[in-house]
Amino acid sequence: MPINYDLKSNLEKESILNSYKLFLKVCDFDIQILIQSKKEDLNSYVSQINFQIEKEKSEKIKKISSLYIDYLQNQNRAQNSSSKNFYILINFKPEISNLENDFNMTVIRENLNDKFLKIKDSLSRCGNLIFEIKSQKEVEKIMYSFYNFRKSLRFA
Image 1 (cartoon, one colour):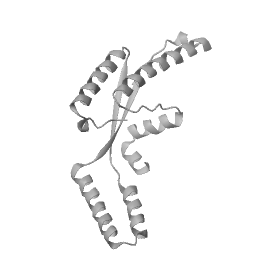
Image 2 (tube, rainbow, N blue to C red; image 1 turned 90 degrees about the horizontal axis):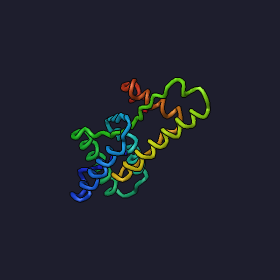
Image 3 (tube, one colour; image 1 turned 45 degrees about the vertical axis):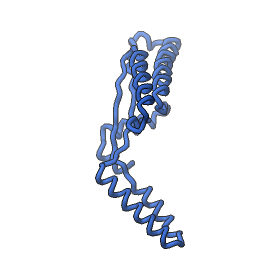
Image 4 (cartoon, rainbow, N blue to C red; image 1 turned 120 degrees about the vertical axis):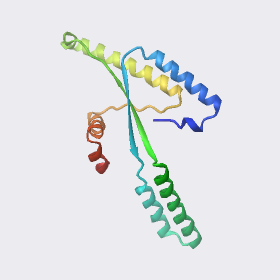
């Protein structure tokens, strides 16, 4: 999960940059950072506010809520708000001969897990929240969103 670097103090920014430098030093193996940017969809949030407006009795609060919705929509249009997802891929190519027995598969898993923990620890120091993608279904959904971007917008 990204952090809003621009809102940090100068001391926090310096700390984040130093932590990121450490992250780059720790990753002495091949990685790839993928960034997926999606235009922010405020429809569900606006629907929730509209639902609350319908239940509200005070006309003043209804008016303020409607103005707030207009403000959000105008800001979203003007600034082209978007959300970003960052994915770190660990490049690992085992030799075919290493895949032949369970012991080697265990070693490979441990190796990948060690790399994941290094990345997680380093980026956590930068202030990022780290989520591990655990299921095949999650991987498929992410891959689909990259390769079929326009279609995935309709189904998200």
